[in-house]
Amino acid sequence: MIGEAGGEVIEVEVMPDDVHLLVEVPPTVSLAKLVEKLKGRSSRMLRAEFPHLRRLPALWSASWFVSTLRAVPLEALRCYVWNLKRAA
Image (cartoon, rainbow, N blue to C red; front, top):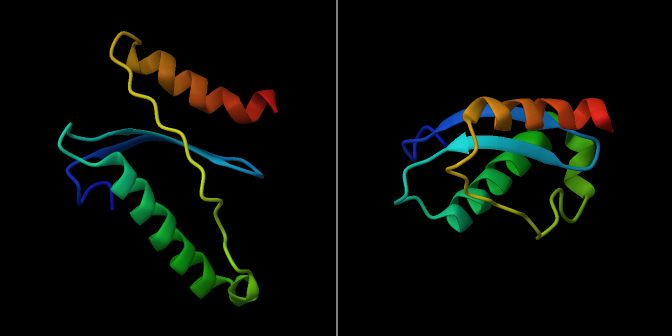
């Protein structure tokens, strides 16, 4: 999905109640549409793999957060995302 948009997943952390993604995408990519597609596709894939999830009205909340960063070194962001789970 992100690769289809010309981007790259740099880091992922899955937590009990949220998912943190560090991705690089071209500035022409609509982040709102990208998040919508990520949530939709992952919901379909999870429901296909785990049939008991089909009875739930939604797997993801409607909320999401995106931040763009230039001045922070990539390695600092990678460490931040990686440490989120360890701090919980």
